[in-house]
Length: 253
Ligand SMILES: Nc1ncnc2c1ncn2[C@@H]1O[C@H](COP(=O)(O)OP(=O)(O)O)[C@@H](O)[C@H]1O
Ligand SMILES: [Mg+2]
Image 1 (spheres, protein in one colour):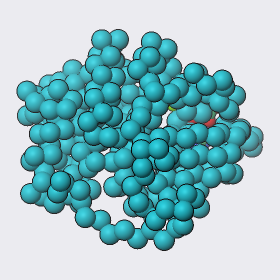
Image 2 (cartoon, rainbow, N blue to C red):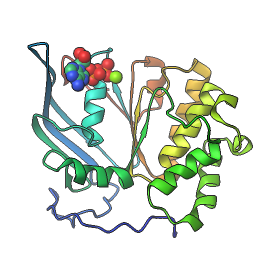
Image 3 (cartoon, helix red, strand yellow):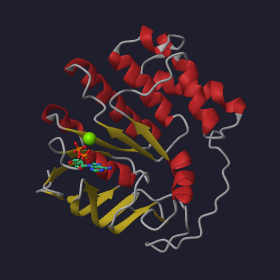
Image 4 (cartoon, helix red, strand yellow):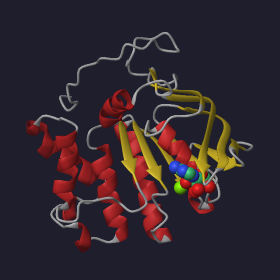
């Protein structure tokens, strides 16, 4: 397709599944496997244990939700999955890469080309148009310049914003800004998209639009989306829901 950036593959680790390091997972092979993960924090002389033994599997091409009360550890887990943080115990394998034992530098390299992030607060650059925001993400991922135009237009069209390409964030609604953020996060073709409460600041109609876009992206871009929420109404569109309570997953929906 000619759109993938040509990154050097320097992933020496053996895969848990025995396949070549960095190989594309098949449709049935997990994209990410979390086993026995524990994470706690030391604050003001007291230690709080947030994750107490998490097991989780993300398959290619699926939409997975993490649900739980505020403070239950959803963001903590998302940070671990995205390679931003490391567990105290347990293992996290992402496409054959052992995130639990890798250095920050190694995880950053994988993250840059394989993982996209979406936040509650959109995180767009205010002086750049929707088009320029998405283009910046391609530039930062090292995608060749001659592929930018087609890819930016494709991503903005996927999120239904072809008619708003040259608007800046302040000229867009909250839902539209979040859709630009989605286009920006998928532009470099990550295999995993992590979204931390992406609908929390949207009304229910805009939230439903974002969820519709997520479904389209899973189908058309073959990405896996893992998102957090505490909104029960949007969980119907998930392929799988993990319910977090007291540092563990409860009965699975
Ligand atoms: N870096 C940190 N240092 C200390 N405590 C933290 C840190 N990150 C998270 N926590 C604590 O861990 C708990 C879970 O937080 P979080 O993962 O943000 O929950 P959620 O996203 O489900 O609301 C909270 O009590 C929070 O204060
Ligand atoms: Mg959170």
